[in-house]
Image 1: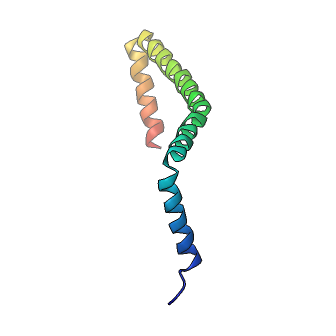
Image 2 (image 1 turned 135 degrees about the vertical axis):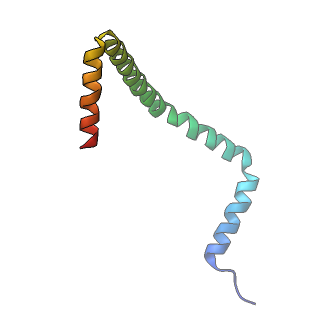
Amino acid sequence: MSETPPLRRLMAAKEVLAVADEPTARIARLFDLVWLEPAVIRNLAMSMAKLEEIQDAKVQLAALPQVERRAGMVRRLEVLDQ
């Protein structure tokens, strides 16, 4: 009878450990999420700063005369077409 290849034995052992160690695996997944928090907070802060910048730009555009806004839109389209 042939012996089970080492890789297959390792995979089978991992499957057994995964089932037997489900609470620990669940806790590890929870830690994975918690460790993401600083990066998520940084991304959120950067997104909020960009959103504030966008909203400020909208206020400034709304305050411009229509002729200037239209000229700016035309110029923007010209730049995008290049």
